[in-house]
Length: 246
Image (cartoon, rainbow, N blue to C red):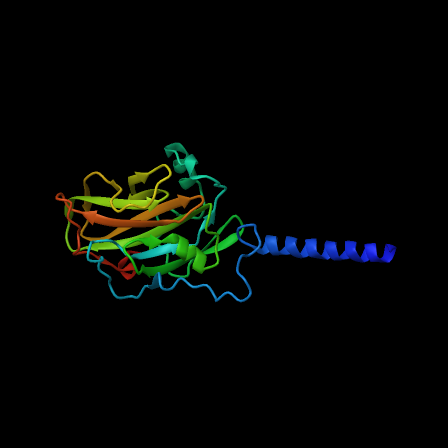
């Protein structure tokens, strides 16, 4: 009987150690939910790799080409905390060098809290950029996360009195050429043109768009486009990272 008890105790210790190792290896701090017989995860069909050819907005003017950074884990359990002060504090913390000026290249990496995260140059299949699917397909954390997104919009001429129109799930902040222009606070679902900037000027040539999207539980996505004074989408723009000044 004593030998049997010892064997049971030893088996339980081995099981506990195995679970601890699995949890420690998981990016989200929990054991992987990928079953052994589950097909390999992929970001298709939601994204394809961006090419060097210029890309125009979709028929409704939405920007589909983006550089996306793998999600940064955040201690967020509820989207109810997304007040303006909370979002500003989280977004403006220091995560990686030149985070408000850099235009990364596909495959560039940054180290945040001891983890290496990579940038991915992608074309979204839909008008909205599905960040949840991006993270899930890469086996990255999907809840309690922050995403950084960067793109370069090339304008054929100076365009005055245009507006940036954004929708996001959940909160987000957006910059044009280094100036903060759109803020979305609170627990919200992604709705096209949910928030619209004041009148802006798109410069002739490259213009850098940068955004940070944070979310707790639930799906994450965003959509961005530029509209004119009449609310009509701008379509004579191109997106091409290769045109970015060095």
